[in-house]
Image 1 (cartoon, rainbow, N blue to C red):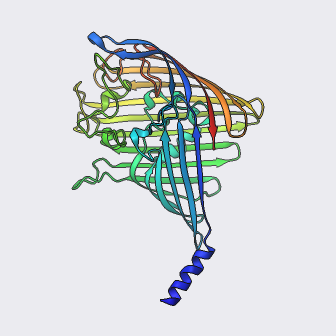
Image 2 (tube, rainbow, N blue to C red):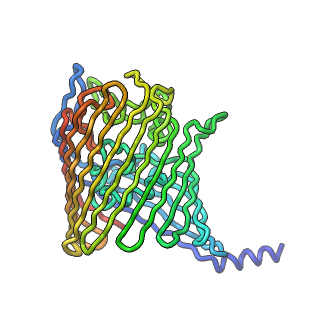
Image 3 (cartoon, one colour):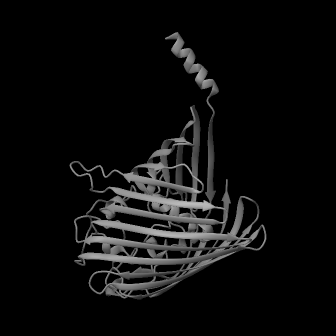
Length: 403
């Protein structure tokens, strides 16, 4: 026993560990040209809206703080962890439905030669490789995501109960796979989520592809926060009422899907002070009419969303940069549900220091056709209250400080 104890103290003396505290504080002032107020008398009503917004799906990046740590276990192996919280800087309320560490919460083991395995609440492999190529990540924030964040590149949802393996990087190539346990007795597939992704990054070129398959997405994907409900509740969105606005009308009608399947690919290239990028995603809500969620409109079959995004940015000086992007989303669903959405975004950032910048980001969206709620499609910029018409303009100005 004495020998074992002495070896333990010796190992502890040589182990190297570190913990980093980090975060962003980013309240922003937001203007929305048309925000729904209600659906009184079966007619949508809307008005101009001015607000200070900084919830988990704010106009720009959303405030958060986190702890990231590692411990050297010897033999080239490290124990790692991340705990990341989202909060509203305007009123101090927790984000992500009230979860203490709703953005990320995982622990794992890492080895440079073998790879990394982690377990907990994490982003999907699809997000790992497509999000870095998006205007949301590069300069635009959440309002530049695709309508109602149909492909989750705006980071609206995370996956609970996951195990993920990430490979080492070989000559610029890397990959990871993720599995989220549904945890339903007697059924392996119920509420499970599977995802895989791969990428290549060398010099100015970056390429990424990703895939995700979620069974019972109304529960496994969109109900994965403390304020989420079960299959009896529409966790994706709302049809609105005489006193409340709609929520996520682009996709809210498809809560009864048995499965959500997303595939995407993209690339970016940097030359000098400029960068250009391209993303394509395809999202399918399959098996409508299942018991995974409410189906008041009686849908059966599938709904398909195809989105393309072109983005660019230019750094004029070390302090000043601008960005612009365009996305087009076409949809085909049950009955007469066919719609399309055009969105144009632009942003300007001025760095006051390495950690603090002031910015303005704007987004304009125009919709046409019939959306998931069986109505004339309304514009719905991600993270905002949807419009009462087919057009919506959003402008935000803010000060972001990183620590």
